Image (cartoon, rainbow, N blue to C red; front, top):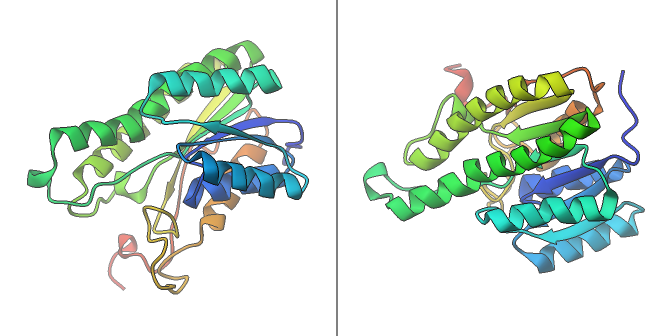
Amino acid sequence: MSINLKERVAIVTGASSGLGEAIARRLAAESVKTVIAARNKEKLEAFAAEIKQKGGTALVCQTDVTKEADILNMIKVTMDTFGRLDILVNNAGIAVHKPTVDVTTEEWRHIVDTNLTSAFIASREAMKIMKEQKRGRIINIGSVSATVPRTDTVGYAATKFALSGLTHSMALDGRPFGITVSILHPGVAESALGGAGRAPRPPEIMMQASEIADVVHLMVSLPDTTNLYSTMILPIGMPFLGRG
């Protein structure tokens, strides 16, 4: 059984491109009032215009998730505009591809702030609202790197492992208040991190961002009492599955 998402309010971070854009587009297509948050205001405004042209509702909120003040503003703007928050998708993330010995402390902190601390702050603030509503859903976008990392991605792997721990802890803390907290681990997909702009690859090697968005839609369409707590989606050709 799926619920009617019409009139529900969602925030999607990192929504100007890749997975975030696909997730926001999918939610808006289901009549979810969608707050699209990212640093690039120009891209967000063009994306919002596209959503509105198709009959959806989108609110642009320029947000740098490494700045707590921006995250607090994102939550405030959402509440000032819609008066509620039903869904938070913590999607914003970055990766630095270089050997561990070459990663600077500044780069490490930037990765942690973007991938982990931002999810904590946004979720903490969302939970305050959802606790009063006695319902709400938070979805963290993880990675297969939280199970099997790639080489030369120490910061990315560490934060995705940590995001799993954050999800588990917040799922426990939110449970008494009807708040569900989940994590979705995508494999290789067309995104800013997964290969956008490269030559097309066969679907058994690289997924489309819309496929991840479909899973997010499934997760938020479940009854409020049901939590698809942790799941993974990946192309069948990924080495993650082992030798053929």
